View (cartoon, rainbow, N blue to C red):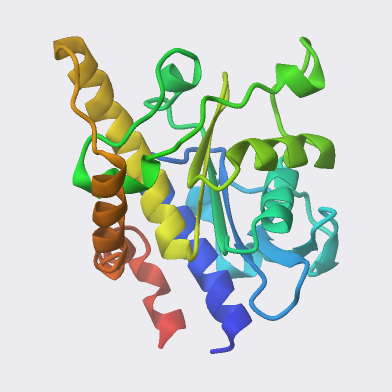
Amino acid sequence: MSSVAEARLEIAQASRILAGEAILDAFGHVSRRHPERDGHFLIARARAPALVEPDDVVELDFDGRIVSGPDVPLFLERYLHAEIYRRRPDVEAVVHSHAMTVLPFAATPSVLVRPICHMCGFLHGTPCAFDAADHAGPGSDLLIRNAALGAALAEHLGEAAVVLMRGHGYTAVGASIAMATYRAIYTARNCEVQLAAITLGDPVYLSEAEASAADASAMSQVHRPWELWCMRHASHFGEIQK
């Protein structure tokens, strides 16, 4: 299987996994930097993630235009992927989610998402929520529907692994599809635990050193949850892999 075919398969697998883990529903999307062409990335056509197949994946340039594949409807927010790839050469995959467990933190400027367990060290340094109103005015639909908004979001993300988006959701990035999928899932899990801990009192979060060590440890084993999630949610792609 070629590297491009493998990338298309991974996007389909991740889409199914994230839908199965209730991180994506009818909305949200996964992309991967093109493994062979600079300035391009791969993303599914506009389709519910639980239905994505490898053949749904098209190639776009960083201006959000189809350069390889059929002329199909595209996600409105493809620009957030394009501009993150443009700004962050270390990023190989992007997940955008509207998971409801994260939204309370995106709506509460005074409370940052912080790593509260050793599985979530990547959350250290997560910035305050991006507010589309600061860039699109007070009457937008909060979607990242053009390159200017995508660039503003990428700038706000900075060097972090996750950026929250007020009234909208969040975006997670990683050095692989497996890593970005892991981070998208565990951001939601961390928010569940963090909210519960806040109701009990004053949580103790991971220090910067603990977060760094914990993340390195977890990422060295990211193939384990990826393998489990593929078996649980994307096992019907097994014949394609052989």
